Length: 457
Image (cartoon, rainbow, N blue to C red; front, side, top):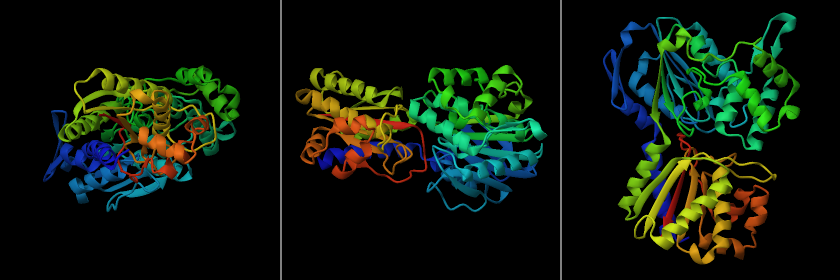
């Protein structure tokens, strides 16, 4: 990959990130005039009288939450009475009025539990004179684990953090979608699936949301803590059956879900609870916004540009095969007009773990894309790919994603690296790292799924 092409791919990706910067999104959504707060989202406006409330709380969870809180502090300042947010380790900002707890993702840890308990304590103390801003972004579900429990005294059933961690690992390894993972998370939690809204009632709640899920379903983003839930215990049990996980689940989890299906444990609220009449869930940042900004940058760089979709899902290596096929048609048949062409898409793919390697879904996609290039060398010489996560952490790595083209394939061959062996072991990170094939942005403090950029010359 030439330095010029790599620079263009990075600039196009960076433009997408800039469009979904949480601080800019909050500042464009909220405008304060004295004691009045004006909220504008997608052309719809509302005004909140801050003077009508005794307390103003800020709660939140997600990789973008610290930057969201920073912007909210700049708008509300001293009107914030208290607040706590949970963010992934390293995804922080210097805040004045809101406390930050750093926790682990995607597998939850004890710090995440501490953050969830502190949020719940503030929520349960809220009353009709309380205004609550809930800041929600991708990663929020793992960052506010509150293991479920029910019953009392000797009949108390409790799911431990270790058991929730085990369930999370099983779901990540089997290739479950984020909708499926969060369905289970909601039904093993005391705070997700609308239960936080129940705790906050009768407070007035404004939830500001950045979407990291395909389709932008509000009850899926961070497992919908302030949104009525469209799923049930029966749905959760169906997911367990789909992936044949029953025999691998901790006994306490199996028992808890069985009680839920039987109706002896109340299901997550479906939206009919009066609490949801006092909640405004506002979607302020999405993947498509990032893709459109990336496309604008590509056009400015001289490429004939098309946004393919913001709803790309499926196995990362299978998506790589489809994207390479589209790129080959663009190169061979001018499918999107005369070259140079830039094709952009986004979404969230999955990886079924078969090996013990290191990587993420975008790195796996790039590695599988290399395999497609190797299989059709004559048809792919002018095709270049960057696949990257908008949060800066693709899987449990320090890379946002990876690049793929003929040049990288040749460098890998010279280094004795077999893409087949590394792909088989889900070890994309260790393939790309020694040949400078990774994109490392550091934590971006935003999160709106992934962006894939293809340049066809």
